[in-house]
Amino acid sequence: MKMKLLLILLTFLVSGFISSGSDTTLSFSENDVVLQPHMVDLTLIQGADSKGAVCLDGTLPGYHLDRGFESGANSWLIHLEGGGWCDTVRNCVYRKKTHRGSSKYMENQIPFTGILSNKPEENPDFFNWNRVKLRYCDGASFAGDSENEAAGLQFRGQKIWLAAIEELLSQGMQNAEQALLSGCSAGGLASIIHCDEFQSLLPKSSKVKCFSDAGFFLDAIDISGGRTLRNMFGGVVQLQEVQKNLPKSCLNKMDPTSCFFPQNVVEHVETPLFLLNAAYDVWQIRASLAPSTADPLGSWNDCKSNNANCNSSQIQLLQDFRNQMLDDVKDFSRSSQTGLFINSCFAHCQSERQETWFADDSPLIDDKPIAVAVGDWYFDREVVKAIDCPYPCDNSCHNLVFRRV
Ligand SMILES: *[C@@H]1O[C@H](CO)[C@@H](O)[C@H](O)[C@H]1NC(C)=O
Image (tube, rainbow, N blue to C red; front, side):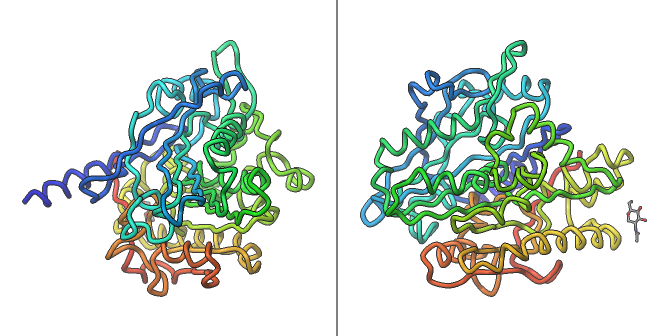
């Protein structure tokens, strides 16, 4: 009975999906079915402000660090938090009054689950590493560098990223033997953008790799023929002057907005990189493929809230979306050092949630859960290029279902 109540409560939390214009973000309970999740304290980066590394509202940035132990004491996992972007002064002014724009509103403690868990039965390969969640409070995937004084906005993602790495190096990461930069959603995009820089900031002798979860945002055409996500990314890049921090190798060939799309960046990343993404990424379906601005009559609302409600023509568009994703990772996948896990699920951020990262019934491709796939790739135990068969063949998915809006 207690369990049932808990499940109902969790279903309710998972359905707490907020979609508001271009500042679309996902929010759901991160503790999942872990009854007593391991809670980790927030640390503000003292002195970051003297380096100009501040959140949108000028407050100090922060992170949660859980120390490694035993054989993991000199290994470091840096996980970049996600949470959409802000692409206009108005959106950013709104954001600075939330935990995504100010440490004043950040939780003092957060649960460490999935890839951040400290238990071997929940996180077989990284549980005893030093595990860090870097909070996201700049609105441009840790990559902007500008300000808008009139609106009282600081766009200092790049400086926050550098100040955090500097602080963690001084906290012991300068002795790292192994390191993994990870991140989910906007943080997953950041882990791609900052991958080579991360490698360059760590000791030459350390084994460094990067892992992007739900960060492979396609430059897609929406259902009305527009480019909703490209328009938003264009706004973010311009407002926050992100071009300063995008890979020059991409900027030599393309415009800055294109270089904020991972499909144009991954070929330039030299450090080993793993891409985990649901082929039917629910954030992308809701905010990029079929956003309400492209669907004024709401004909996609049923399908967007539950994949079981999609009709055959909608499924066809979703298959086209998946094919585009597979096309965009084709060259990337050829390199022997890259890893891939593209499952045919309706999900977003599968590494942070225990039930999708590693559990008895977590998602599989070829009988391998995500945590094992990422571990096999990181430790060079096996080549991992896992691409699922198309929907609806995979019955191991934990598809997200949302409240209709
Ligand atoms: C599927 O739904 C959309 C939106 O309501 C509609 O335009 C389309 O005709 C439907 N297709 C089929 C095959 O029913």
